[in-house]
Amino acid sequence: MAERVAKENGVEEIKYLALTVGELSGYMPIFFEQYFPIVTEDRPLFKDAKLVIETVKGEALCNECQSLYNVMKHEGTCPKCGSREKTILGGQEFALKEIGY
Ligand SMILES: [Zn+2]
Image (cartoon, rainbow, N blue to C red):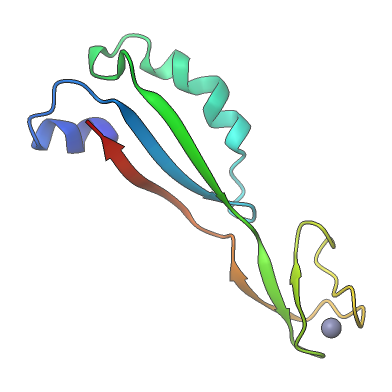
């Protein structure tokens, strides 16, 4: 995807890629850190490219008592009232945020 964008803009070298990865997206930042060098190895475009990962906390609003809490930390259960009924507010995103060149 980044390669396509770069080509469209006539870019010859990418300096960095910034990804936004939510805690609840199902993607692990470590996965990208480990595979990025392997994936970019044979692509001159990415020769000196750095991977910048911005993680977004998984936050939810309890439907019972309206408290805001971190879903990962509390395993999906409201720390205040114990309810699992919630509205996810953030942390589900996974996007290529920026390409630096
Ligand atoms: Zn609650």
